[in-house]
Image 1 (tube, rainbow, N blue to C red):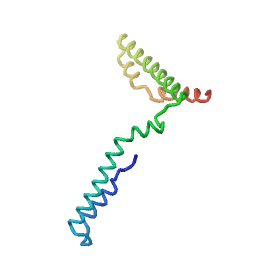
Image 2: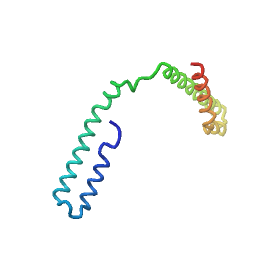
Image 3: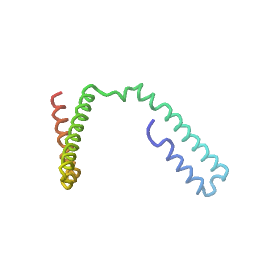
Image 4: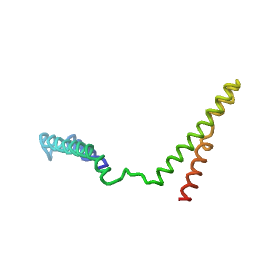
Length: 127
C-alpha cells in the first residue's frame, strides 16, 4: 500500500511518448500513457481509501502498555522542563534582567534532551 503508486511507470510512459522513435505510432504511445496514468490513479484511489482500514485490521497502530507509560513519562518530563524554563524567564523579566532571560531562551538543547533520554533509558531498563 505504500510506495510510489505508479510514479515510475508514469515517468517511463512519458519518456515513451516523448521519444518513441517510430516503433509506436503517436496514437499508440498516447494510449499507452493514458492506460499507465489510469492505473496509477486507480492504485492511488484504492490505496488511499483502504490504507487506514488495513493498518487498523493488522493492528499496526496499536501501542504497547510499556510504550504508553514511556510516552506519558516523557511528556511529563518535557512539560516540567518547559515549566522551569518559563519560570526562570518570568523571574528574570520581573527582576528587570532581560539579558539573563534571553540566555534562558538560548538554552542548549542537550540540557533539555539528554535528561529526558537518560530517564527514558533508565525506565526501559527497569521494565
